Each structure stands twice: as structure tokens, then as C-alpha cells.
Image (cartoon, rainbow, N blue to C red):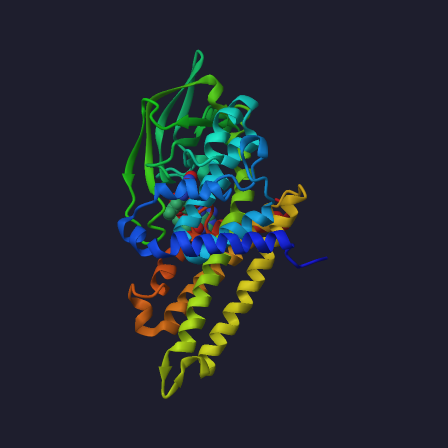
Length: 380
Ligand SMILES: Cc1cc2nc3c(=O)[nH]c(=O)nc-3n(C[C@H](O)[C@H](O)[C@H](O)COP(=O)(O)OP(=O)(O)OC[C@H]3O[C@@H](n4cnc5c(N)ncnc54)[C@H](O)[C@@H]3O)c2cc1C
């Protein structure tokens, strides 16, 4: 067993950190307040390999490992969780689904554009009445000759407005339950597909989230992703990997909040001394630093197993559950340590506090992670 990152991984961390500090940090509040995803950041992310982190070089990808992926997402989240969320959704949901289950034609058509940062990827599973119970979706895809016709709508889709390529999960045979669900690739601009309401969110505001509507949307039969009827089963595998990304995002956010709290505690003076001299503050810092290390280990372990081809349903959910919940605590303590200054927008504490709540909800709520873990423990 070796807990050290390799020299290359340390260099990767350093490089992504410098990039985030230089290209993202100065604009964090501007993008947050405008609810604006900066499309001009895409080529810069692509130049570092961050739009194709784990994808093969033959498609222009950086061919990094799952552990490397965690390092990248962590470092982006340490500075701006919303940008990290967009990068994670682009890599870990849309592009991953195509890379894992697309045939050669779909991979050749879409991966170079996604991986090269020419377009952002979106991934549509959730619907207004089917969130945790995703298999209860209503969106349908009906085969008509050499086309599939999509009808329905998807809710809370990251890059629903600005995504150039979207993976959509839809019912193809309702009589077969979750074995009657398939996945499709749809390009923005396809007649019959349009973004609906753009959400006005509590946090993660620089990451675009909207409804996507399909009305008599015809797509070529070859746009099916994987076998007909396997879409939901494949989705669970995509989520096994995606949840490691959300765990890494949680670790990065918690790290950013902890660092902000530590710096403030050393600088802020009350009763004639820095507040870091008070044991109440020291214990908060100590507890958070300890929890963050534990979350990072769970996350890297899940990623390490994924890199070795192990199915990580249990490990991914454990990492996502624990890391997102300790991140909520880290962001809460960060505000508390800042006192009144934690409640205003001049310090990063309030944004971490708003952004963090998504992490116990997206890609499966904490309750659903516990359900997944319990099923694994009980062999159900
Ligand atoms: C900013 C943002 C970005 C998102 N991006 C995407 C995206 O790109 N693609 C996509 O497909 N989806 C996306 N989502 C959707 C997200 O995955 C869902 O919101 C999430 O899965 C929860 O579904 P829901 O909101 O319908 O909540 P519900 O399922 O209605 O849950 C409500 C509450 O009930 C609890 N609950 C539900 N079922 C059970 C149960 N069996 N046992 C115990 N408790 C239960 C939940 O844990 C939760 O506390 C995004 C959401 C947000 C907010």
C-alpha cells in the first residue's frame, strides 16, 4: 500500500491549482452573480486536458486515471465549485456515457468535439416527477422507420441551455420497466428540442441548469447509445463513476472552505488575540481537517479501484455520501468562524455555504446513497 501521489500527480495538482487561481478566482463572484457560465473558459480548460480528462488519446483525450480526475475536480472546486460542477458533468456524465457505451461511429462523431472543448456536454436523466425514482420517467422514444421520435421533458439539466450535445434517457418499452429504458445522443439545434426554464439557483450559479423539452423530436436510429433497453442499467454504471467526481468536488470545496476559515482565524483579532488562539476555533479547524482527509481517502480509494476495473457501486456511494456531508459541515463552520463577515459577499465563505448544498442532492441524494450502500451490504 502506498498513499503518496506520484511526482506527475503532484505536478498535475500544482498545474490545475495555478490555473484555477489565475483564470477562475478573479471572476468567481462576477460569474456567480450573473449566473453565467464563461464559455470563453472552455478552450483554456481544453488546453489543460480538463474537457477530456479520462478519455483516450485517439479522441484527443488526456487519458488520465480516475485518481488524476479527482485531483483535477478537487482543485477546481477549491476555487469555484460551480465551474468544477460543470467540468464534472461534462466529463463524468455526458462524455463518459458516450465513451463507455457508444459504438465507434458515435464515439468518432462526438468524442473529439466534447473532449476538445468545442462543445459542452449535457446529460438528461431527471424529470419533474422522476428524480430519485429516475426509472419512473415519462419521456418516451418511439421508433418510426429509421428514426427515433422523442417526446417529454427533462428537469434540472446541467448545460441544458448551453450544451452542444446531450445524452437523453427515455422509455422505449414501458412494459419492460427499467429494462425498457434507452439512451440517445441529441445535438443542440435538432428540431423539436429546446431549453425550457433556466433555473435561478441558491448556489452553483455559474453552472447552467435548465429544463430541456422534446416535442416530436426526430433523431436518426443510429443515435441510440448502447443496446435498446439497456439505457437505465448503463446509467447506473455512469453514476458509479460520476459519484466519485461529486465526492472529489466535495473534498475540494471542503478544502477551500477550510483554508479560508484557517486564514481568517489567524488574521481576525478579538479580545486582543487572533481568534485562532481560542480552543473553540482550533477544534473546528482540527475536526474539519481530519474529516477532509478521511473523505479524500474514501474518494481516492474508490477512484483507485475504478482504475483497476473494479465495479465501485458501494465505494462510490460511500465516498459521495461522506464527502458531501462533511463538506456541508466544513462550509457551515467556515461561515461560523467568519462571524458576520461570513454572511456577506466580500469573503468566500458565503458562496461555499450556498454551493455546497447541491452536493448532498445531485447525482443521488444522501438518502439514496444510503439506500444504495444498504442494498450492497445486504446483497439486495
Ligand atoms: C444544480 C443541479 C444540477 C443537476 N444536474 C443534473 C443533470 O445534469 N442531469 C440530471 O439528470 N439531473 C440533474 N440534477 C437532478 C438531481 O440529480 C436530482 O435533483 C436528484 O436526483 C434528486 O431528485 P429530486 O430533485 O426529484 O428529489 P426527490 O427525488 O423528489 O427527493 C425529495 C426528497 O425525498 C427523498 N427521497 C426520495 N426517495 C426516497 C427514498 N426511497 N427513501 C428515502 N428518501 C427518499 C430525497 O432524498 C429527498 O430528500 C441536478 C440537480 C440540481 C439541483
